[in-house]
Image (cartoon, rainbow, N blue to C red):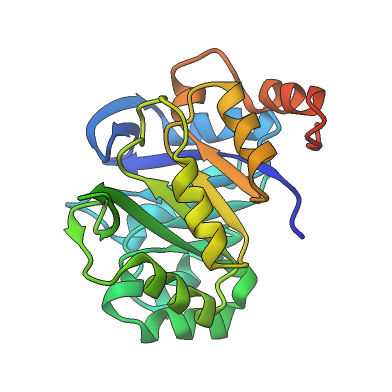
Length: 252
């Protein structure tokens, strides 16, 4: 079983770190390289770095950022955004990422995720899934939340189970950037349909939101951005709080 982790989420667009609300309403929140270094120095367990620039979603843009970030950061990095081939995934790994993050390609070219898992190994692949509630049902989206997917959630989880990715990174579109609290029902549905490690993201705004997730569900990690971008907290303070509630996190 993987140890519990707190993972800052860094979203990059046009060379800047941005923070959306519900996958829109982007706010500029700083320089990606400097922010990544701050998180690394503040005892983050890992970083997730995604290029969400729709106009320039090229692997070279992402790898350029990674080359600079890994010079200053000494924590594991998962990176993705715009991966279209095994060659793209290898470029990201060679640029310093420990794992690659796949999303849209899992719906468009299912042979590509297969080849990536076979070449890099399950431990190096994170499958990201973005969901929104429509008519009381969880609906999958790709392309940064712009394209609705016809496959239902269970079918897609069955595919990811078969694919044997290393982890599933679950994003609530409805709650992303709102800081209103997590979607516990979504976490439960994912847990009930997979034994793969789970990273949850969406709605995290307080220490207690994260505490309640780990106390209620056996998931592996929580990824968050707004709580770090818009409050005075950092990973080491957050982990100290969680440790005080008998949730064991490594503190540097």
